[in-house]
Amino acid sequence: MAIRRTLRLKTREQRELEHYRDHEARPYVRERCSAMLKIAAGEAPHAVARQGVLKPRDPDTLYGWLAV
Image 1 (cartoon, rainbow, N blue to C red):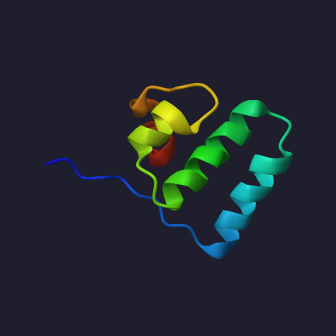
Image 2 (cartoon, rainbow, N blue to C red):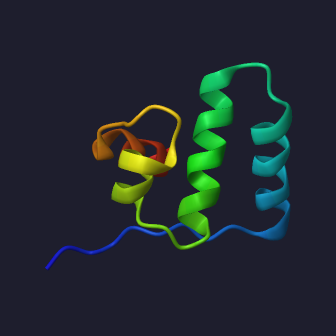
C-alpha cells in the first residue's frame, strides 16, 4: 500500500505561495506554487501532476518539488 504524500502549510506559507503564484514573473515558479497549493488543499500529487498543472508532468517531478 502506497503512502499518499501531503503538504501542510502555515498561514504565512500559504499566503506567500499565493503571492508568488499570482505575481511572479517566472512561469515555472507560478506553476510550482500552484501545484503546492493544490496538494496542500488535499489533492493527490499524482493527480495534480497529470491534470492540475498547465502542462502534464511526471508525478516524480512533483514529488521532487515536495522534497525541497
